[in-house]
Image (cartoon, rainbow, N blue to C red; front, side, top):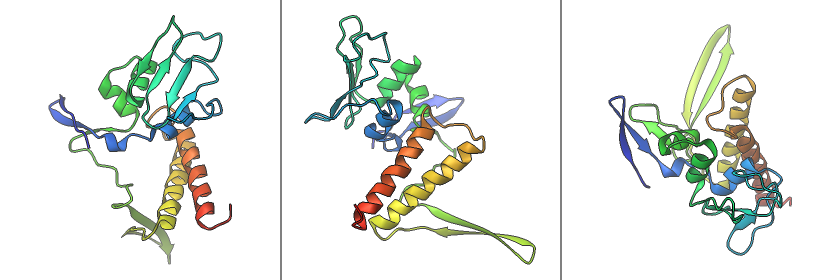
Length: 196
């Protein structure tokens, strides 16, 4: 895990590469429905064209769904980068910390760390009995891939419910990303259970 520390209002900030969304998830959310088939090295043509210039051919822009790299082959553009952070920096015309924050990979020291990783998640049960509201927090440790996929799917559904109720996106395209995660988790569950 790579870490970069910098000072921000007297507190330390940390870049955590492991918190970045996978490149294939990011690009599917960014260019939903317009990615071509991958070649042998995971490069895909973006059929909607280059997002960095007015592309008339719609054939010049490619993304790598494994590494996150991107490249426009149009001579008038020639934009390229090595990962999704560089993509966000070009797209939003922003600096590294801003791009990392948009992608959910920048945390202020002392800020609450996310607890949705497979090893440290908790289930919160809220219920009412005899007019009294109760809340219980139970450590959730999946014992196999099926349980982990079920949790991932439920986490995405919960986040989509929060977004529907007006919670702002943590990064651009988060809603599409969560839908993709739900769909992919469901597909993998079906494969595990031999239904596909």
